[in-house]
Amino acid sequence: MAKVDMDSATKTYGGFINLLKWSVPVIAIITMLVVFLIAE
Image (cartoon, rainbow, N blue to C red; front, side):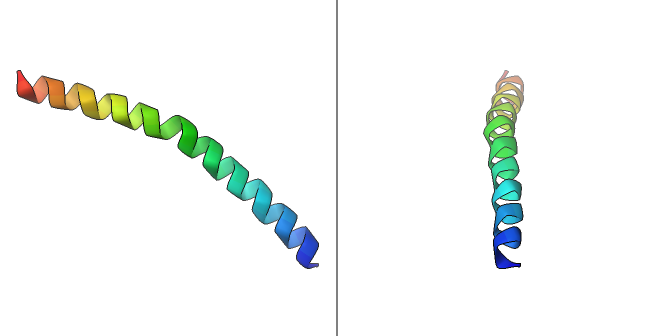
């Protein structure tokens, strides 16, 4: 039982990290764009 839960948790964690890997640079680019537009 615990082994199945651990496999599921590992898979979920992997998906979360993968999502984070893509979303953080996108958010950073959007933030820089907004700051640039405000600064002008």
